[in-house]
Length: 279
Image 1: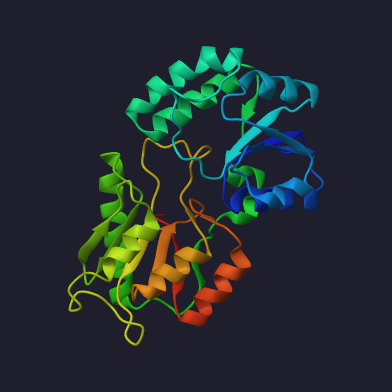
Image 2 (image 1 turned 90 degrees about the vertical axis):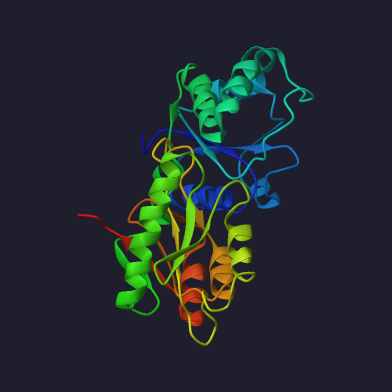
């Protein structure tokens, strides 16, 4: 539904800002639903409304009044305390089912939230659909050509990431010398990369002699419209600081926030970014 009016339900971080700017630049009609005390202040310059997490009645009234047809959920939202969350009448009706779904993990929670929205007749559109410029392409995106050893690490990292994703553990893996150095659980990619510096130096790379690859891969159960793997400038800085030589993902299955800045910094640091195509 590329021409229909879209509402961005915007959590924290730069991703919603970049999508909003893209929509404004390309002329697609849109509004921003800012989440109180969470959304980036840069979103205040865009048309929209500010709501609490439990304001479902207000949300659906706004979507109807604004004649939106599609909804994109983007940005980070820490899991709230459902027991103390303020909620309106509709929120009181739907939040218990969302909370129950959350016992199956964040992916289950997001799918239930999406089902509540689609039940009202709205189409869920992924961040990558709202702004396709964010997607990683195929092959080498920036940086030096990966060595044969680096490509071996990249493929092994993707293989391990697929395995932990099947177990609903996490999205990110670091492999160096065909050895798995770290896997992501609930701590996030930044903390994962920070752990590399605590390992035996014989296993890791350095700024002078880089070694190892970070892979980010969606779990098989994930709906990519709701939660696609993402990297940004901080990821590049952290990967470089960990002595890695590159970042890999499946082509067209990774969001790169502020791509020009990310590519420029990766090139400056000598770090490659690669979109692997299995076909």
